[in-house]
Each structure stands twice: as C-alpha cells, then as structure tokens.
Length: 94
Ligand SMILES: [Zn+2]
Image (cartoon, rainbow, N blue to C red):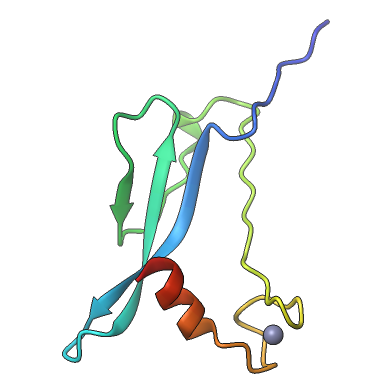
C-alpha cells in the first residue's frame, strides 16, 4: 500500500510582534499570524490558536520551532548571554 505524501507546509503559523503598543507606543505585544494553502489571505490574531482534531485530517503533524540565539543556541526564554532580542524583534516585526 502506498503511503500518503507530506508537503513542506500546508499551514504556517508564526508568533509575530506588534511593536507599537502601550502608552509609550513602543510596547511589544505578541500576535499569532497564520496562513494555510488555499486561504484567500493571511490572518493575525491575539487569540490562542486552538488545535481541534475534528477539523484537521487524521495524520496532521504540528511542529513548533523557536528562534534560537545566534550566540549561545538557547531559546529566547533561557538565553542570558546578552543577545539583544528586543532589537531583533523590532527589526524583524517592527
Ligand atoms: Zn544567547
């Protein structure tokens, strides 16, 4: 029996940043951006993404990738080597 094929990405989600919040206008707020093949447009939300197995084909795989520090290889939450994550966020999403 043949096995089904997985393409590279059917849906892509990314935690992006809204960099112009708060009273000072420079507060960083995480937002969830998503796009699935076949969608008319991409979408950004502050709501959590719910993974509902009833609305996904059986065999769906969800992989989550964190950005890792270019200096120490640790993820943002545990990196304490001094890499300037805030500037990286503002340069990438601001
Ligand atoms: Zn680091």
